[in-house]
Length: 278
Image: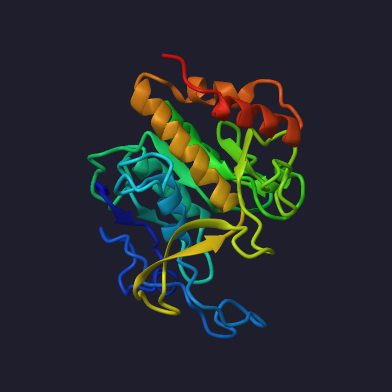
């Protein structure tokens, strides 16, 4: 179920829907032609990345797809053709959490959890940090993919911004996925898939269109972008059970001393396989 929605991409070439910022977050596709994203850049089909991420967070019906059954989603589109700008992302963090953004109608349904399956290199920008601080001050938990460079996540933003929950990716055996970033800024890890083997990725909602939207479909992806929405779904379940949780209290379980990936995964598997007490 979606509530108040927005597309907060200011630059028309990136937005690809002809009108920049508006109240329609529908993804028109991010397919590009060779050279469109800079000299030497190749052509690419539309990724439907956000559609895949959203499907992992919330199931529309109780069909076992999605972590938080019937959670309400506030879709905000900030990336388009060739990527996006930190200024748009920062405004989206503020708006999604209930803050005011100039020229954009107020969000009547502020999100308690923000999932950001996106990122880049470098230090956390002041603009990003201020937006994150603003969201947390309104009680919103901010989750960020740790990145897919097989490197220390301290060099990946906004995963390295203080106050976020940075999510790494695990493989099927519970070890760190070969591509996942790692390090002290990582708070928690979740399944991210391994698409090198058939059926080894994370299965979620997708679209069959190669450029513009086509038929609804499912597909396997891999990445910390796929890991983060698993944690976002869990955070939504936590808040549905205990609405008074603050961002700091919501982060508490991930802030305990960290165990190695496989030992941590084994403990989680034991917990999941233990029959509930009545």
